[in-house]
Image 1 (cartoon, rainbow, N blue to C red):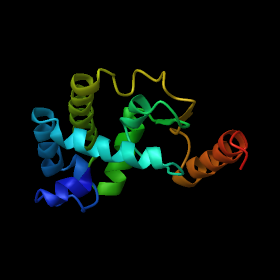
Image 2: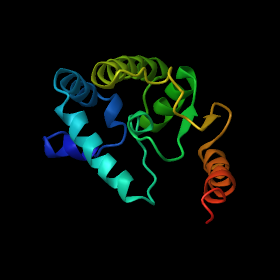
Image 3: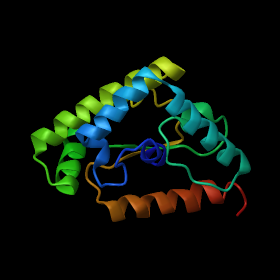
Image 4: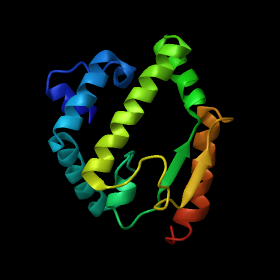
Length: 156
């Protein structure tokens, strides 16, 4: 998605871009024209059908019928703290940007595909609450899940 935005002239390569004014403007454009999302999802589906990939996508769990699907959960407050630290902004600015981004993203996916992001967790095989975990701990848990639940099941 960020690569497509970059091709459209956005500075999407910058850290924290999604929560920036420009990132939020791109989100509004996506809401008005689903072509961005449809193009990305079409490419991700092609990659998924080739197999042996890990995708970081908010739509694939609903669009793909196969694969092991993981949802990483975090409270809005914890997410805002992480964004504020990463992007050197206040907690209040981060929370406001996060809430705006989340509402618009939910609206896009509800209109385009009919699911409610973050509320309809039916497609997921594993849900991990990351509020009390750092990035390394999340990575370690996911490695254990992949090793013990996914790869053993597939005979790897």
